[in-house]
Amino acid sequence: MAANFWTSSHYKQLLDPEQVDVVNPIDKEKGLTPEEFKLIKIHMTNHIWRVAQQVKVRQRVIATAVTYFRRVYTRKSMTEYDPRLVAPTCLYLASKAEESTVQARLLVFYIKKMCPDEKYRFEIKDILEMEMKLLEALDYYLVVFHPYRALLQLLQDANMTDLTHISWGLVNDTYKTDLILIYPPHMIALACIYIASVLKDKETTAWFEELRVDMNVVKNISMEILNFYESRIEAFKGIPEAYKSMTEEKINAALNKLAMK
Image (tube, rainbow, N blue to C red; front, side, top):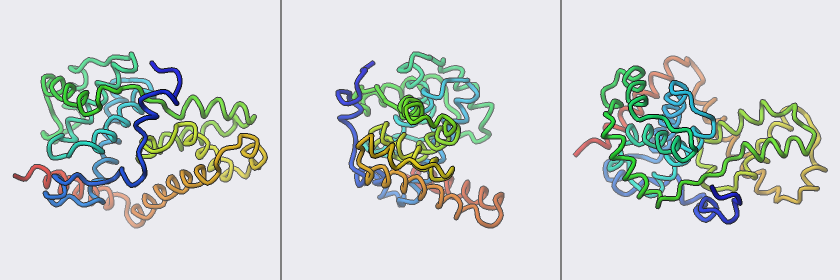
């Protein structure tokens, strides 16, 4: 494991914001829209979390799996790499990379138990075959740094450990976006602390000044996080159950586009 983020493959692979959320030309030909692309990524991120809870892996494994999943689709199409298979395979690969190995047969067992839809159900050999394809797609760079450790250290340094719960929740939600592919993890941690401090009415100006960080970057990340929440709140206006059903229909329609010949 690389100990220093700045010399790691993760740092070297950071992308510009305009390089993420770009629909692959192959998927575009199938009629996949940017909105559907984003929706599938959020949906499959949630799928990874649900499966991970069944097989009981550490938070870090889940975060690494989601990072792999999102990184793959900056390079490969969803048409060629079925998200429903890529998601559990990312979890399998992340569990090995983070030294908390989950057996492929366990993933297969729980997914079959959880998912009535046959299209989410795969065999062990499918996961093992996709694992090789993902390793290639990721250029065999599997080290991922996350904001969690920096978050705890920064909160301790600032004597604001009472913000741990809310900040940690904010960090979790950043994985429903592509922020981990764009910004250094400690900057994401700082943005989450910034939002938490505003929500809890804590004065942090002097502390941020002492850190000498680029507040424009911290505020940009904060805005990305808040925009994500805003879009979710907007979507959930009205009847939540109706929205859920409508969203599932949209996701299924989008995935069906990818399956079309």
